[in-house]
Length: 289
Image (cartoon, rainbow, N blue to C red):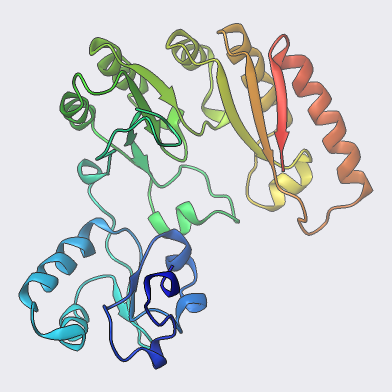
């Protein structure tokens, strides 16, 4: 991207051009791969640092890149290239983002996407969500309703985005807020352990016909080793409840290449997938690895 814009990618060769600052989950998880490219990185959640960065840009207008970089060094969460830094404090749930642009030319055409929670109640060892974002924090219903009002007349679908949508303590309230405004709620990632009869009925009743679950492995043994201590029966029960509520397609996400895999894992996965497909019938089941 930088080369295509006519900007020298390597920092040590870049004598002119803008300051290059990177952030997000991948960079926060390991900034080293971009250390030779960027001038600074933002560690952790961006809501607090971004305000300071914007002020710094305004205050150092005309001072050049070096002036900007000197100013942002003291901002919480900002780490200069080759230096040291600390993570930004977790953001307030009321500041979680939502779609700023609605367009039919997107992956989710015309859908108002709202991050309804951050972090995750789970403790999966492979996932950056808990490592980077800390405690699970749900967005208050009042804030969600206010965001929906901003999109009044502009979208008829509200996408609920989170690592664990059904873990929101007031999921029914969020669904009601969307439906009261004539918007169809769409559900992002679901955890099987959050699905009971009431939640399945809520999801199916809202019109969801496709659901994604992530067992990560078809082997309970490997699942436990990576911190996902959820028994097969939990996924089978979730499949039955959601299928009974009207879901007609399941997508299962599995990881491959985990330490300890072998022929036994293949057999366990085969049995798990067969049992899941039977529990989910008549819904169809697809597997992504």
